[in-house]
Image (cartoon, rainbow, N blue to C red):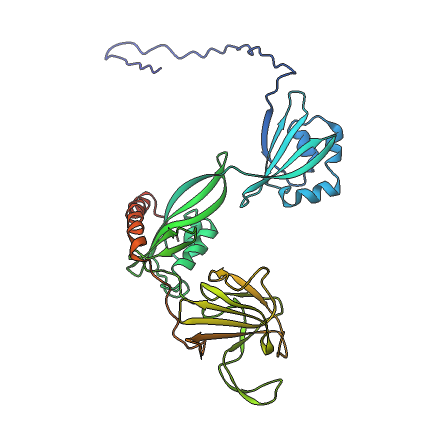
Length: 404
């Protein structure tokens, strides 16, 4: 209800306002002790708070349970679910008996649930029912990509994926300029209205030095996903240059004196020095042609790619569990671990790159590009791109983050 007062010219002013305070009676209500509906209380774990104190604060009145809440075995089972800042939801009966205490762990698709059974507290994991929502955001570069995504409120995982998506086209260390801008559409998964984790980027555009770069996620029939440009060209490199993330070249592709045989022999690959157990990644999508022990190579894996190409990985301490001939592997899949099996004087990876079974220098060979979408898939992809472009345009117009 709204009211207005006006004073006509020549009329007296209205009387002064009067404040009247009335005490309202508390409404009467009665909750039956037999009511089966739980009382739900939600809060965060406080710094320095024990589990027993938390349960008591959120309505659990059973002192035998709260006393048991401090047991080392129980705290070990809870693990990282019980720590300051974690969201906990406690359900109790009307008389304070515990039904459940659920702890959400950000980034996980399950929650840790605490229940009372036979007078004891029991810990279990329970899958979450997640609600997928689409978020859109834009930003403008003032200093760095991560500063821009932080200011735009984007999670670090989205910034990292943006860098990976456009890494073959933009050097994010040297190519960025103040005023470069980006827009991104991405997934966020919720549970009962609370964000649990970030999903994949569905589409993104990046304007770098006036040049527009675009990427769109496409899901193949087998469930595999990959980013493509607006023309269906894959943004993924066909082959990684190295099968190890961090390593050093200890022996190149050349003639050398063999460290064990003591004779001059052609070294048909590249040796990467790395600690035993370092993960070895497939440099491209392929099919396992060999996985096992082979003469001087020791534990050895050979992958075949497209028709003409193959890669080989030798002296492994172990082949990845379950890897067998005929298996399909994706680029960056771990296929084994650095070792010193076979004819090796120390832990390293021997890596070979072959074209039509002829050895090439992995450090110098011109690597083939990833396969573009075929004509049959391209029609579906272009239809999706049209819809995503409309959303990117909307994201551009909704928000532009600016930085000092």
